[in-house]
Length: 115
Image (cartoon, rainbow, N blue to C red; front, side, top):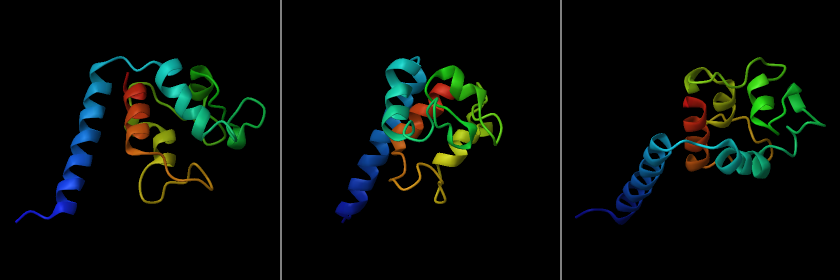
């Protein structure tokens, strides 16, 4: 007999993987896909005025410019992009004092960087 929680976990994982596949197949627009995530989750601290850590995520150019820790985004190389290090994993540091980014939000950002 299959455990219901296992089925639910499998369904959620399948949905996340399907969303990530769609993202990698389609171009990810900063304005349509990334800006809303940054606006809701990041801009309270990483805007053009505050620039916590020297980083603004207000525009694609700002995000690519990086901050005090260096280049936040390495175009085409999500694995080398500090931004993903800060928002993923069990020790995610960002966003501070808020829930971690969802798997779909992270997959969207990862797909945008990969492009």
